[in-house]
Image (cartoon, helix red, strand yellow):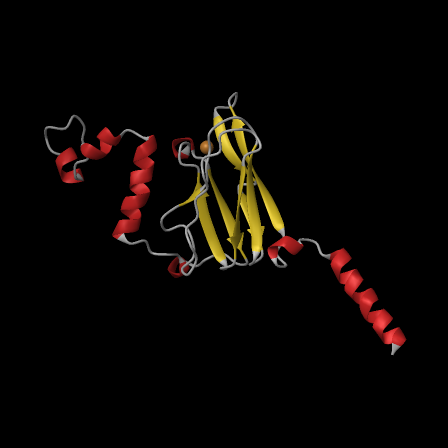
Length: 175
Ligand code: CU
């Protein structure tokens, strides 16, 4: 009896000591650097594509005193998963994490720097097939667009015209 009890304690201790990431219920944590390259005229996520397991956590860390954030595209995440969006990073060391339990592809970008091509992808388990992506509602697309317009010229939105009108003979160019 006594020795079985001792063995049990030893095993329990070993389990506790070997726990890699006890805080996230078995998932491990992965870091994505949010990089500002003024000299290169480029803002980017490193790594650009990250492969993780379901239940893992991804942490984005801002490496400089530049404003960045992280937001999923409206159709850029798997059905059954939630869109994600971080607060705005403002200084070096600012970070934000999300735990991803639903397998599939998560396509995200930085709002202020989308025109610079600042985007990234997290693949949880296996990539999503075309029909496995979330299909956004009109309201979701509108909410996303409203956020974009907080950063970009909303006169373009106000002045938006359907293509037939833009391509009318009054326009300066054809095709
Ligand atoms: Cu950015």
